[in-house]
Length: 311
Image (cartoon, rainbow, N blue to C red; front, side, top):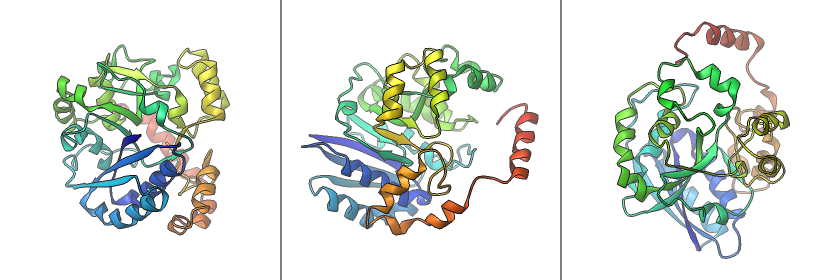
């Protein structure tokens, strides 16, 4: 069985892309292989040889396809220290013209199990399948509600997805000409960038996945309790995500920057056990960093409180 996987990244995340690909291959089930497409900036293309070795060492039957491009969204809005490289996923329908379905993943993930069931999820007549995001929680939705564009997400509360793991039906996306809408919106200011664009344009065309397939690392038990209380996920779905996540997604703090981030030790345990990965990151520096200083946090809170536009 061959699955088509896509990672998008720029030159700032080439090492992280190797970790994501390695964990993907190490956790594959019997008879599972991958056609791994890497859509990256030209500056990131130098990782091809190293990434190819990571893949061949683990599964010679899997393959690597590099797509080194000039980022058509280089001038797109950037916020929260997330570069314009995140918009590259919007170009997938035209970059992969002969591909009908792909599983897109951000590179700040750690795969912990087989993706067969995820890959076999039906997306018939849907643009994609993904996991509902924490933005759906009432307090977070309310905090976002006075953004100038938030009214365009009317009706999406409870159905707003996190785009970090997305099973994309490229055929349906092309049929609906959604990629043309994405390009038109890429020049606007959205706080959650291309993720907002996907949610705005794909309303009613999203299939929903259980949270074990995109387990946000920063979430704690109380957060899952809030998901259950608000009817976003079931108790069983949350139990699975906490105990047996298939994909851990390090949204927020990154373990390679901050060792003590929630579930960060799992990422480091994996990297440290891989001879071809462990020298890529400075574990000592990550252990020393415990987040922004008190003054920096106070300044950030004041700036957030004073922000009218929140953009």
